[in-house]
Length: 333
Image (tube, rainbow, N blue to C red; front, side, top):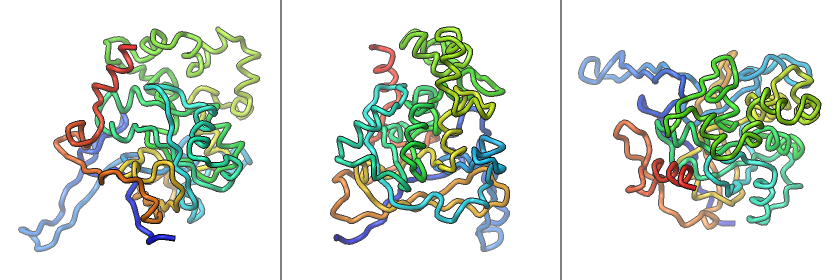
């Protein structure tokens, strides 16, 4: 065993931190400054689902599937988001829906037996963390999980799932598409809505995975109810944030927007530490996520640098990702 080292898997936080499309911008003010008071005291007003953060069951549901009222942050076990972890390198096309075959392929690639996942933390490294920015590339067009991946996590009895993406679900499973009360159906890169764009790129049948009415129209009500029964039996839409609800409803918590030096632990096993605020009746919490790993197990990649000019990410010129290149790859198939 080599020397143990700690690696940050969190994006830095500031008032310019990228935020989910309908969240308000963070506010940071100073009640005292060194020049005024010889002490610095800062006040922060921010949604706790900003940047790298964890979700509690109460974030998306009233009741967990065992019948208890969905737990708030303060009700979760101290080690809910902490434990032995494996980082799976996910190979998927832009805007793709991550399915069990992608998860199985990642396990095979790093020679990790999925049968050992019980009680473990699964970390998904898709490369989206390189595109972290206030951009359509990161939010509208992220790859993401859905119902089938959620069922895979449940069947393998994992403890927690941490992802380097904007949410525990594909963007079209969220209110960015036609789900939820807000049903934003955001304007896409080509001037059409993202729903119209997805249908043109992948077809109506592929899009139906994200839309209850479309799935029923194409496949029929019986087929819909058969597939999505694990959610519909609780009066939960099978297409609205299904991975969130399958996980959290079954007591599997989630961490979103992983970043930092995730590339250093891609494909590795390690100890993951993540502790939310002990927030009474909280729905989640920003957190600093840390990996503890043998130094000789680290991938030989540069330490990530963040260049803040109102964006909050390292662009392609500094070793980060290019959102424009990502979208060109998506729309120039």
